[in-house]
Amino acid sequence: MTIVANILVGLVALIHVYIVVLEMFLWTTPRARAAFGTTEEFAKESAPLAANQGLYNGFLAAALVWGLIATDPSGFQLKLYGLVCVIIAGLYGAATANKRILFVQVLPGTLALIAVLLAR
Image 1 (spheres, rainbow, N blue to C red):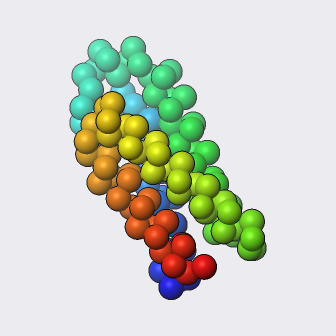
Image 2 (image 1 turned 30 degrees about the vertical axis):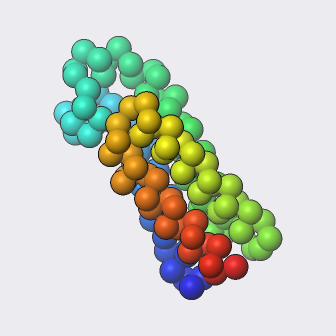
């Protein structure tokens, strides 16, 4: 179960690294605009805000990666912290921005959290 949990945590971390890249570096590109449903004008105006948001997603990914490489109890605590933050951020995003976030962020985070807790 530990291997499954770590794979799921790794996938959640990779999702957030991808989000970092989209929000910090590709925000005004057609790919990011399609992913987030923004217009070219809005993307240009909101790029600094998106980059800031991307930085926070990077912190979540960093906590998860650190949790994967740290020994317990720190590794477990970092995974728990990172996944709970991912889930809360995803719930807020789904409530305020786009319901798709439930499937992109909350569902993988929840599955990983359950696996981490079962592996304990």
